[in-house]
Amino acid sequence: MKLERKHGIGIMALSCLILTGAVLIFISVPDWGNFIGSYFQGVNPDEYSPQVAPLLSTWKSLFSPLLAQVGGYMKAAGIFGGCALSIMGLIAMFVGINIVRQSAKSI
Image (cartoon, one colour):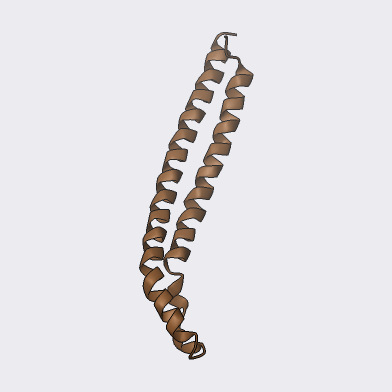
């Protein structure tokens, strides 16, 4: 199959979408990890009624380390996923540009 100029432009458009997704992942997923990791730090059991305070302090002591660990993993996954998508988008952009250049040479 002979690749034409329109194929290269389509691949470049796809690479722009991939790069947009990479930027969104870079921005949003590590922020979600920060939010989840620090979720129970803003909860003060002393501000609630005496019946609820022991339950909140127990939940805070049990789930705070777990959520901190999950938040750290989410931050790492967001950074890794953003890097991987950025590399894939740049490779697709390079391929699309080369297809357009090769089709222009063959004319």
